[in-house]
Length: 262
Image (cartoon, rainbow, N blue to C red; front, side, top):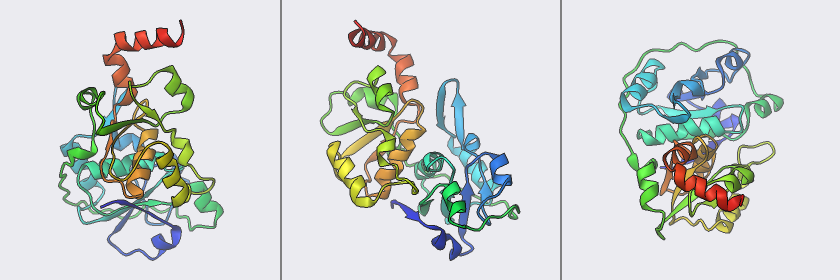
């Protein structure tokens, strides 16, 4: 099951089983949100461990979903004001824990408002539910997995960071696919054919196994979502990203920096 892009009209016609999740800051949510949306800010579903950002554990995620009345059968559509980056991070977490019905609003919330989308200031009633996390480990990568595939020809390592960040340091063998390359003017993503062309130019095809990372797993979530939206199934997010790799491989990173700056 892939992730699907939807517009405001789809949300307007959605039924009671649809849960709209706003991942912006609570203060922004209270200033106006899509009618019926639940506020689950990104800081709640992303766990910070020092410099690292990781997913909640299974029990933590079950508790969070249950608290907000989300069930395994719920149809989830999410949005943000960061061009889909934070919303994509939630979608990856839902993918990781086996949720099947995942949708992403096809535009930034500011664009939604500009286009006269309906805005509410009311909080929806929430009835606690029972949610069961079903781990899909094949959507997550780790430092041990990355270390094992450095010389592999079967799996790709994709760095979704900005070009200058990539040049300043990256995992050996990684291909740089900056997340902004897929960013459209008003929508979260460029048109499908342009996205497919960008993927092809970077050596990606449907059959590839791809490990996506950035500094902390946030903007890489955007590329993860783009791949899932356009039919890629063999995709993993390395959520701890280069922050963990750099810390764990300090001698190698220092050697790389010396090569860049002799």
